[in-house]
Amino acid sequence: MNKKDNLKRVIVDFKKLTPEILALLVEKYPDGYDEDQIITFRNAKNEIIDAVEVTTEDTKYLVKVSTKLAVTMENYDEDDYEDFDDDDPEAVQDPELEVSDDDTTDNEED
Image (tube, helix red, strand yellow):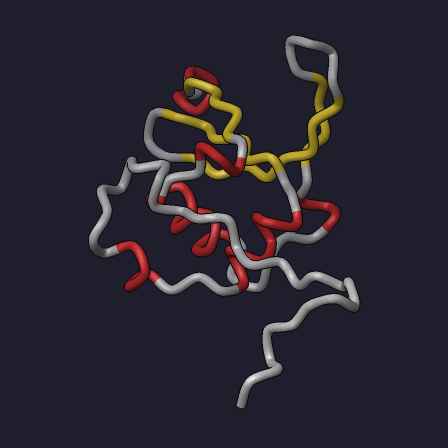
């Protein structure tokens, strides 16, 4: 019997992403994930979910793909998380997504 079939399946939203899962993602997809690595399925509410999969010894994590996830993986630095527990969902903060509005006034004072 295949042990992998008995894994707990956990769907992880960006808000619940922990340093441990993020590290697994970056390790498995060092250059980001491709379209063909994205799994599409329906959740219990029959909504279509796109996710990438990472597996630990006992759990298969299906992490919902999003712009935030892609940017966070791209900018990953394990030192950012050394003060947090591996399972702390507060550790992974929303990345600064570039705003394309013309009213940004960040760089006005030099």
